[in-house]
Length: 313
Image (tube, rainbow, N blue to C red; front, side):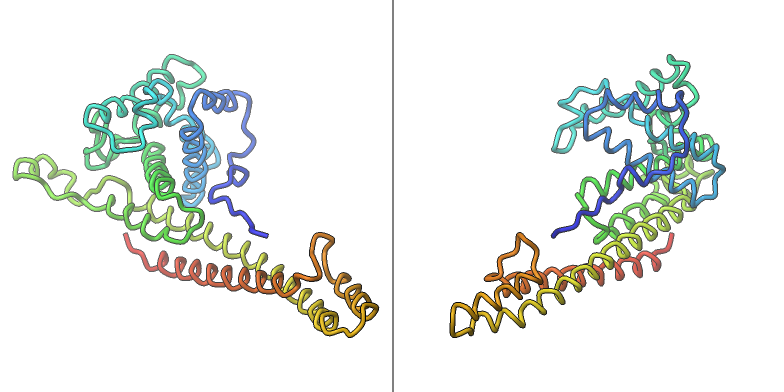
């Protein structure tokens, strides 16, 4: 009876009516490992939702979503020992990992069908304050599609790493994202002078992060609605077994086998074929526990929504 809720189900993505050319670009994901492919799909989903909340045009949304799908395509050529390493990368390994941006860009530029989407691969790890890679570009020199993908990419990476199965705990992930909107303190006076034109600028755009808040609120409220529907189902199931219990008590207290079978037939009338009349109390207890657990979960999700709405960038 345990329902499953897919945090970012691929069927929810709204990438509109993709033509054959775009489908070709998405086909490039076949060369990625399963984890990176799933990450790319999730980033594309979030990117699409961000574009909608930022009121981007349909054309830009489709373009940006496609860029997001292939933003990590360069990871095809990153050694598995680095790409799939479970522990922290060494400095040398990190430098290797960073090359996926330039590799991906080269792949796109060499393929006429991918060339229009090259910006997402090259710039999605650049930072507004110039602290990103591969080229350390700043501010509006970073294409807006890459700025959007950067936020989606970071958020998805954090939530995947923490293995959220639901939106509970998501506030902590958003707080990490908020920190990336804040300017970093200069390590020295000379470093501060270099950053003068960009004082007050963090790594990522505040407006995009605010759009992310709305995406998460919408998803959490959808999860709440889905869980409330399931709660209604559990409530009806509890009522069904409670009706069966009226005859169960008569069944167990019957003084003759005939009476026992008579009441057992009534009990079975309220049960599914797979349910044992003798286990009515156990079934009822399990349903009540499931109801209370999910009710508590919904209360936690409502608390999350309230906390998200109180976040400030």
